Length: 368
Image (cartoon, rainbow, N blue to C red; front, side):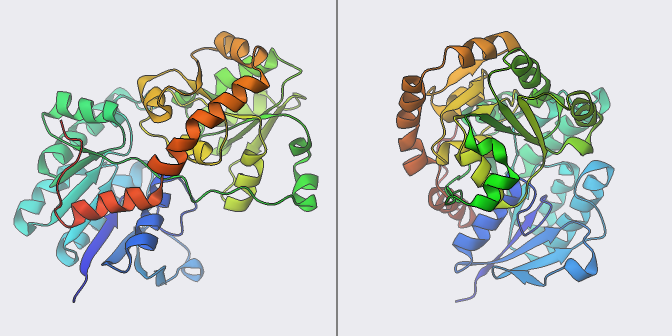
């Protein structure tokens, strides 16, 4: 039996060295490669680093970056090629949604994952960029065969703004693990020998890294390990430069090696999730699946992801109150209440089965 061809558009490509949507792509390829023939579009990459295939998926490299001003060009070229060559298209974060009406000519099964909560309202975007993203998300919602939201909050927003139904499919986190003790790692990251809190996020203003730093400056007896891609934004560069040499705050550059990242995260007292504007954040899902107690920025999407089983804050002062009054009993209780989520809800097996139902035109679940 001939496999249906699935094209994955809108990511940086494989292997998954960048973030949640690339991890989604890699797990779809890994778990569903026996049922579908995958092609994944990849950003500009030096020729000597390119691979023809990975995990059975064909990798198609384009001479553009997947982010910044080249992102719409990257997506347009990817989409046009995918329309001509694939039967099923999974488009993640529709920055070139204006191209999707072309699908009326091709009739492909077009699945759009919106990638996060109301991308058109993010603080990091200018007024023009917000209008541009709203337009593209509107095109995407209307011309997709299936819309995918990663949380119920976003699902309701898609219905409110675009009058379109969507399916809720979250992210998996069971690709994470707790590495065994390693003296070399302990020497490289000596803070793992003492109690610390950890947080991982991109350096953008709505991820509130400045709030975490402000809070821990006022708690010199509590250690924070903050991992981010500091160099990619003015916001990140300024934070990094202005907060060097603080004894209880460790600022680490982005870590893309899974084992190293898991080593640091898994040994923390708790994970602090500071995203104020996201849906089901992959970094939060991964922390839950690592068995970490969660302290989270208080917004509906984060409460939904944790099912309310976390400690919440919305300012530097409230974070200080949470951290300074935290007990081991609190940590143990949060870990225990989050365990069923990690074991049954936030698994890649479940996520991939839900996507397979869309690939096969299966019944839509959890629509509004």
